Length: 405
Image 1 (cartoon, helix red, strand yellow):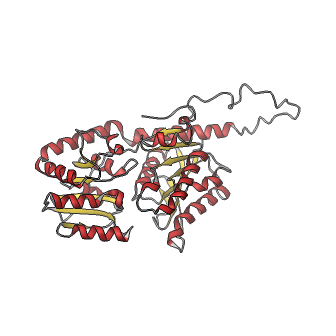
Image 2: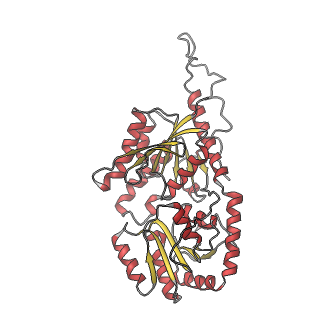
Image 3: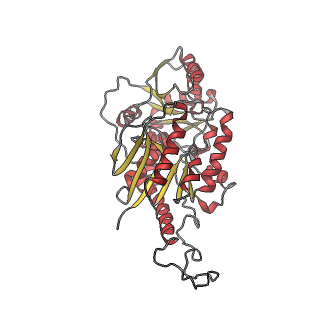
């Protein structure tokens, strides 16, 4: 039996260096033997076209105007999928490109994945909020099924669509082993994010380090050029501290080596959906001091991570002081967090929930267009067919149950 063909739009490029792309990368890795995946990407994020972990990656050129590149990427991906290729279903990641559902639904069943509420990120101006709110409506109303990576997103989307069309599928991890890499630093605190924007909370950490009179080294990994004014604020706050800004690290083994070698990983985000970074840090058994936002406390308990009051540099300074003075206790926390992930959040289990949704969508799609059962011109079209799938709800369909764990 041939594999079902699934097109993936919204990751922007693999290998991954962002949260959503990490999610898609792991789904592909787990399910490539069962599905024929095609990933639509842009040259602004990758140059790896062709075969990728058993999937096929199509990379479109960058649009000459940088600010329009993401719109071009989504639009050309949708046009290619609808008019050039043929798939059994589409998996659309992210909210910002949900407008292409107007095209995709002309031909395909679509599962959409929400990785968070984009308009809550400080990177975007208040003028962009109507655009994202409209895309949020498209994402929920026009997709056949919506998955969310955080429990806190469920009541938000239930205001738009019925709960039966929403599945909570958390992000996951695979067992990780750090590479043997010489880093040139030791006994350091670590902050890491793909894009360093205000909601990631680096300014809170820098202020806290001043308050606790920290004299050690802080390593900062991530792209801090997203917002120029914020970048200047960070460098001003770093004055007087031993801080190294090393930029964005795309090589996963090197990133894992920095995480595994850290004395503490500090995660001061004020907003997340469900952070892949936080999960991967816990998977490497690195002790964590993190904000007490609900997206973090939904996953980890107070005996697995040391929480501080979100947004409070004073409380973070106190927690950092305690953590640095109690390394054995922090390592015990890290061991419990690691074990919790291995028990409840491995991709090998989580990917099966996506597979169930893919199968349900494509099975219903096939049944709704049977090639050999054309109605007779003399048949009574007003008589319901008791064997029709529209009269026999599929008990495994994502429209009849929520895949929650």
